[in-house]
Image (cartoon, rainbow, N blue to C red; front, side):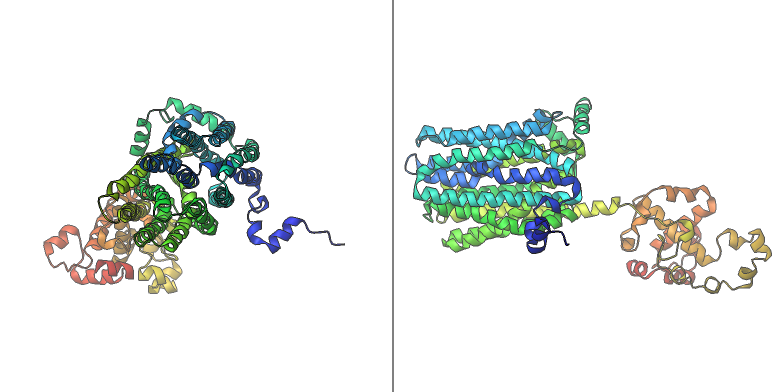
Length: 615
């Protein structure tokens, strides 16, 4: 009798996308923690939706319109809308406070504090005082959330391996953003019907979010004792994070590639953060949208697009360095900013919808790279420090961006036509400069990788077989095609009996044979010497294998014998001057180069890529 199939098998066969979210689809070592994180990713958005920068910005702009001065309201909305980024400025403090401590209980404390603050937001009166108190509660709740996401990256590094980390993060982000998008739409529709629903929905969300706190308390940190030991040990060697921002400067100075990545992120992120508060203000003042329309364009549509792009971005991020990832990903933000500028200039709402869709596709990759990108630079015991620097710089640009965009808009509002167009144009410029910066940084990363890439050198007895690490291309090596090598049939090779072969004493055998063999050996070792010392000539760049850059040992070893030193020098000169006709007897004798006729024949024996580069 055939046993009944378990529900997981049915789901796997009928609903493959749903199956990919289940814990059974993950590697065995990641399933337990992933199960609890997935539960938390569903329930925690019930409090996160309240302090989501776009959602709370739209709520405050509409709820307090006509109650306080419009200019004051616009700037408060700008601060609240940028609170998600601005609150990250204190991340270095969270890194210091959690250093050497158990991470999971620390995160639970932050989550409980956030629940209390969200409950207070629902009780704020609609007055100037209530507006300031609400803004303070939103910022404090975002401070707690910033600590959560800063420390969570360390837990992800310990619990999930590099090949699966982006996939796990993508699944969790997909569940979170879909829940957040639905909650935003529900909140907007409810408040369009009755603004007082806000006071009922917030306490209910706080109660439901307690399930997410419980789920996080069940997560186990792999290597917990070892990680805490490393962090405590680092306090004595200067690697420990501190409250002093100078530590962040020292970290950036010590890792120049990470510093360049942070600079490009600053420009790109500044352009993105400038758009959201400006859009919230314009949707109410120029497009005359209320709760549902504003939340839909600023939050729900972008969040709904993220699950579509997250799996694609996750596959790319699992395969390439984050710098190469950002090289392609950043242009989505540039396109979104350009479409938004055009939409505001023409006062066309459907263009704003297209911009929201493109921006949502970009957010899918941004959610992954923002949480995981620093791990491509950081050692294991300094992951929180690198994340602290990254998140703190996000806070710095979050502090600048809202005042820059809304301030520019307010400055131009009564002084120049199309003030909103100029403000959005500034956002586009910052995004474009950041994207170009990633292009430059990606090229530098490729150049650095080419110099540091490990070589694979073949054993000496197999050089020339199947394209060894020498020329890999001389006619004799590829075809093994000299008559003696093909047939191994000369009398001396068959009998191995001539006096010179028995004694290994003829001059040609001592010097490794014919003049062409000596020249090829000299070329190979000469190029090896140049590659090892960083002297790779531009003309040979396409033909020098990376194997020659691995170590100086293979280049130094031949120097122990005088005749091999001569071969190295002659080979280097031959490689550099192979296409030059040398007729000077003095130059030929000084470099021990063959005549121009012999030189031409030696050049013809080089591999085809080498001959092309010499031309």
